[in-house]
Length: 67
Length: 266
Image 1 (cartoon, each protein chain N blue to C red):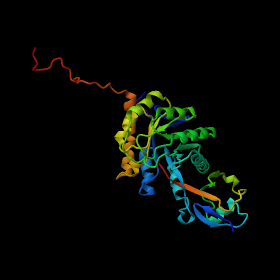
Image 2: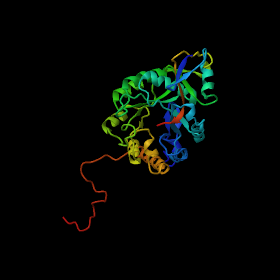
Image 3: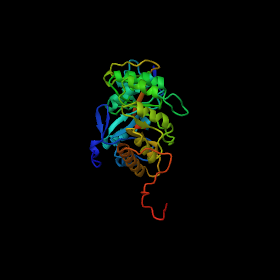
Image 4: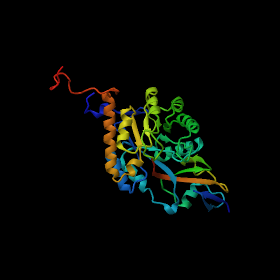
């Protein structure tokens, strides 16, 4: 079973999992998030056709206070 | 200019007009309520915020976002913590999508000790982001040549530091800052390092167009009162600059007329 890193946490995924499916599985559905895959920004419109691979690193970010 | 008409003196950044010259950060407050009350007291129309990883088990829903949205302020996301142009560009793209804004406070840090911007990566990132349609406000040092290169890249305003982030040491290098003001006609906002309202007033008196700060308000004993104090200082400093400061002199010059002085006889 392939494994990916979601915010540095190893997570097992099923074969042929795409980014949209991962968002649902990981509990981020309907939230205000942005995503980078292996350091590259992925626009929302591309989530469904972005296939995940073993050892992919996914950054899921949300708004936070900043200076 | 009518001194009571504030609308006549506005801050223009990338052809957008702001009545307030105070940009305020949203980090480090003791509570969300304290943050929103401080923003209100500051009169700021432009607030900074950021993006960070958050795992589902830490999830607070969209509470912070709701609070920020309720302020009604324009949002200025930052790229704090980025250490390369590539990281900053990607985080800027994520911010643009999430906050639906082309504005970005561009930070690329080059040194852990004083959080000094990396000038080389900063110019690379600014050049690319301007090409992609961002309204880039780069957090930079007070180095003249760096600032000129950022203008060459297409930045229409710059944000040189007063001192390293969070130090509260004020305008550390007035010679350099005065040089920037004399040489650069585009808007200049002092970003970072301010600790007291008097330092903000001094920046505006020198002709800087605004200030951006966070820690000095958020870490005050009374952040709401401190936000108000900075707002008043910024207004005072700006009015002082517009009014035109007197020239400094080496020797004393009496303000009371000498002619007719009693008890004085030739």
